[in-house]
Length: 467
Ligand code: ARG
Image (cartoon, rainbow, N blue to C red; front, side, top):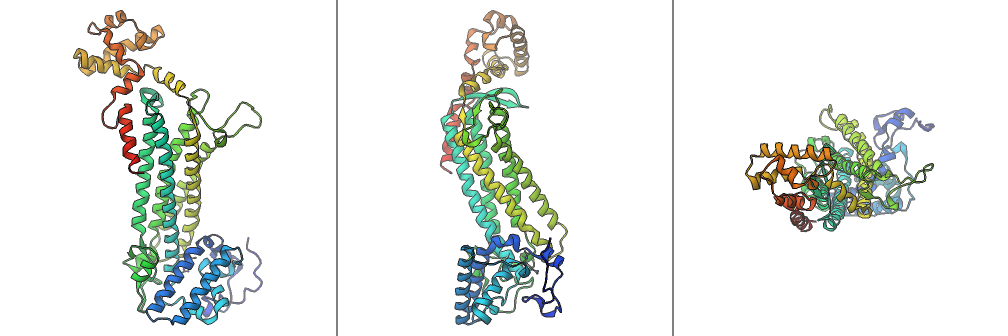
């Protein structure tokens, strides 16, 4: 609840000119964003320095005032970084907390900083800068995760495992190939991140409240100083737009969905029943009652974080969906969603990178599982097509009978005696055994993007050159 508001009677020093009294305690509580937007302090100060420098360059404020403002802002930056800044909820948000402190430090010159801008373009700027940096961090983290998968794929380009559809054994694949599937997924995520950086790379500052300004500002100058490609082109859209935040959340949600699928596979693979991998002690936990247990908690939490990220995306889409142009205070609720999702995403990528790098792969278990469940049945059918000239549908039928026979005998396809196979179809020769092993099966799948070790190595080389 709100702390007691003893001197409500004084109106806000930044905008209270027409107000006879200050806000009710509840008004102050619902209105304040300083609790979370203080995260934007560095972006706010950078933006203000660029703005003040431009104002002086254009002759809108004096060089002396600009110097005082820049010096004061740098002092505030070190105060906040050093933990020596007192944030006040009465001053609502990061913008007014910094400006009020500037006034205390440098006096009346501080009042000139807000010339030709509004908090509407100011917050759009600060938040864009923050999201841009977060996207750049995400890009780097995804590169790290892709590198971890490339290393595991290289190491296991020839390790055979069962490939699944419907989580039922389908055809043998290599573990390297499976790892490379994740490289493709996280590679797409990274390219979405790069596109999002391109989309948001326009500077909002100078849009002012919504209509632009009559002062002779230079928006190209501030855009350049702040590292943006160019200024935004419509001042109304500029202060109404949160697409950059929604795009970040959408990318986070898709990446989270990929991380969650990986988490689910890790949970399954690390069960004693599968035994395909063993998580390192660093990325698993024990049970307080069952001494034998090694639990994949980190993977489970990655799976769960995805739910949070999805929630943030839906929350911001819903916040924005009915807003008339231009700015409405609803938009203040954008930040917590993005901050929370960013924290979850960073943690999830970091945890997954660690798990992938550290896990021990049990190639013997994978290989044994790869051969069970008649996983080379398709190879037998393909052999009948290739060597005996059968139409695929007939070959499928013949193979089905061989599978039924092996099942009734309790053996693998490769263990069926030639006489049994020939009784099913007379064209079968002992050459068929060459294709019934899992190694032969994977080696034969040389189609572009297929699971043959030779193909997997080509794909690894492709991605190495791009990572
Ligand atoms: N704290 C506000 C936000 O986060 C800053 C913009 C306030 N603008 C206004 N017109 N009240 O959105």
